[in-house]
Length: 373
Image 1 (tube, rainbow, N blue to C red):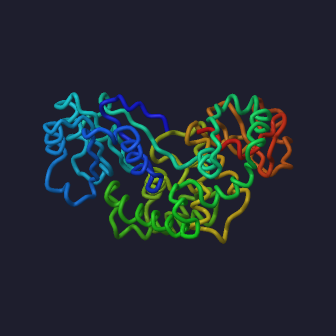
Image 2: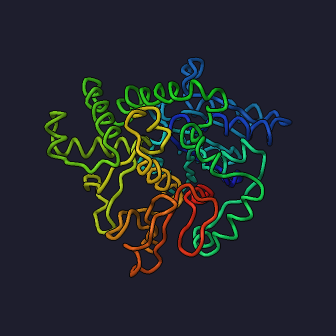
Image 3: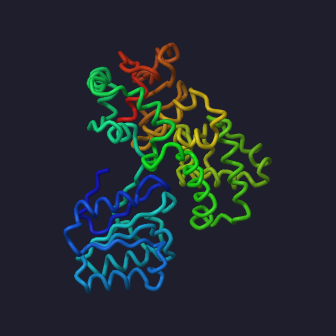
């Protein structure tokens, strides 16, 4: 991802397992390893518990330090206030911190809006996965260029690799970089990551009482075995024995944790309790880990498209098809024989087709949407 490392205070948030720590350490090794003025600390290290962040920064500056990297900052209770103090007191110190996707940098107790530059780290795109696996370097594609020139773009890519082969791997084990350790244990590690999100992150960062965690787990199970899920809030409220508002809060928490993607209509309110049109798991990898016995091709396609596009663009429900992107482009997701019958009178409408290497006209290969970031 592209980060301007010249800023004095940089925040990097993302879901568990997307590789924030590795990204930080790789940057230090690659760009600062020859210098002795960069310090990396992790807030889950017991040795750090004996001093405050301000004290740590103060000591480091006195030793000539110019760069401070703080990992897992959400595990430190007074993070926003102390980051503000560090920023204001030590103007030659550059600070980079990472935190959970549940961490709202701008909503801490101290005002960091004028100080911190925030970045969100997503899981690997299909493009990034292919680059890791094949060694081929492919540039990101802008959405407007994709819809206008997809045939030529796909032809150029296909001369170097077979994208459908990589796509079939990627949807099962490719979004979280720990697939590099082992694909055999990938699903189990992903399930362990989900458990940590539910049992540790949500109680700590959203004040969910631990006695209700089993209700969150049941909600995840119900949604993952009925995808795409069209919420019946009254039924969910009865099944989980909690109020309607609590159901809506739980859905929002699970979206913040990057377990769910909530598809809203274009006209719906962006308020926290707005009922989504549909609920998807955040990425197909989660489907293969949680609900492997109930996976449908159509749901995998929609989940892949939604994830890859929504990570960089606004995606909402369409009145005429599956998705509306940036309030401009309408997309119907399907197999390679999907027709445009329902889209014939809709401007800027396209088919995103699975099992298709190269498209034509307004039929675009689904895999190509994995090259947007």
